[in-house]
Length: 135
Image 1 (cartoon, rainbow, N blue to C red):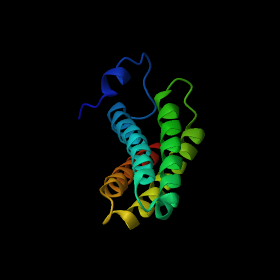
Image 2 (image 1 turned 180 degrees about the horizontal axis):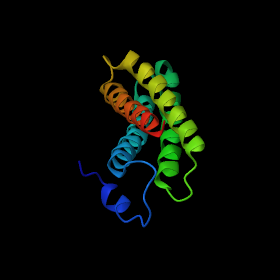
Image 3 (image 1 turned 90 degrees about the vertical axis):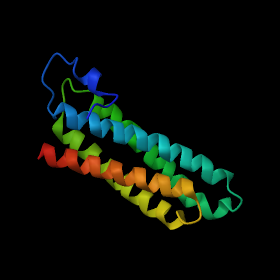
């Protein structure tokens, strides 16, 4: 599968620690999740009963920040530190799981939460797949 990162990763002069196709797929899932979580948080703030969505918006923003940091760490392949990357992927997977669980609580009433939960689940799985590949 060609992703937006595939052509860039193909330009790396050295072999990457992680399979390039898997890395590209994970990066796309992670960056998409960051964007979706940010949009969901904003949508939560626009809802009439915003006080019921404070935790959801907070977790959306936390997840978006962790996903952004994870994507940045994964993109840098030169001098790759496996222990640091494992810790970051684990943090990202946990943030995605927690955010997805919260968004799922609101998914029947708010479509943005349903979409966000789905994106978080895909991102969590991508992080778990990467973690398995690093073991």
